[in-house]
Picture (tube, rainbow, N blue to C red):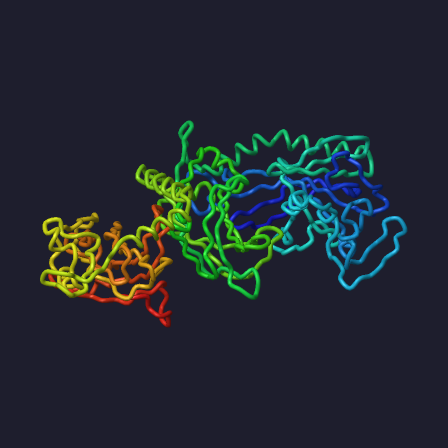
Length: 606
């Protein structure tokens, strides 16, 4: 019987009791092992110890929520694990099963032991870990991954304020830790017990041979006793997790998530920066994935990159989950697997009470994954989704799906063909401008002077663009003041469309963000020096809430119906805190594709 303490994150667990048996664990003839055939245990010499442990978990909420009515003793629950330990004397050798299809491949570059003769043949590289998850056949990586998911990383315990590395003795090392809900007894014959490990729809079987039939029966009785307590322990865990929160019958929780950014994201290889993206899982099922951000240690996810998503879950299911919501950051690779860069979990209580504030979470390595030893963090915002949020996400998703369903080649061809057939400049043959180069006024002539403003010289277009705007869009909820913004012109924009020599050029529009509102100007098609006319949608009144708020402007090339299909030309932020009231400014800014501080690439127009 053992009584140990250890700390897991912000929770403390006390090992109340542990029943330990030493067994033989023969190799399966096939990793699938559907027939239940194993090699003789004595040939392989695979000795294991099995420990059935009951842990008392002390919830961190008992300390961090002192005002709660829940006492520290009440804020505990029990959980049962089955731990498999391996003899350390076996760690410097690997037993090769000659009946598996990949025996030759598995035997390369390791110290081999012939399981019949016991003879050794040394190689340059010695594998340091043998056993249950290494005898895998070709095409059976799922089961190998299953066993690796049970890897035990608990290497140190606190026993009476002393750090103990080997609580089960220096000759044994804990290798696997399986929750009792994933551990099933399939069959018992005398002193032999067949076991099935199961998780996330995957399973594999193993056989344990006890020294006596009595020991095998005792093991089965202890397992069954703890199985009978699973439901009551689950209810106790739920009560601790709720800690006074009263859920309504059938309550549904609909949350809006904003995956904002990451910082100090590690590299999965030394040559290149990572291409990080985030996956979100609940109870093993993926519920969201962002797009990847190319080659960066400090990614920023936007709407276009999948930063926003809405998730609806039964509140009771959320609080009953063992791991909460798991966020994992991976490095996208075109060829090969996507490497894990770290993960973190968010508890049900945190999600339930989150009110939209920005929080950062540190990345930690998953079991079996490398520890990059970086101070990597992911920033999130979460709050209850409103009806407006639901409508916005649904409309955005439908537009995205519609854009994906459109044939991109045909759409691009039609747009280019329309540009080729549209004449945007000509030489005037008569009238006051006879002989002069005139240009089509875009997005269209003044509705009150159709004939006079359909075609103008470049000088006339500049003059018209400086006249007072005729229509203003008043937006925002602020009451402190008003900011009047007019978009007049852009110059020297790059051509982001193909076929520029034939007339297919950037279709420019300006998007503005100020405090709680977003605005968009009219689009000027096929023009690298666009001018917005006084009668077009170019003038906006932003209602101010804070004097220190910045105005953000981005120039885009309009492409297709999708909000995410537009190409960024450049961006700029306008500092308004030094602006003098009742003063008109005519401002010109260089456009850059990034908001990073200088030195930056050459500007992309003004």
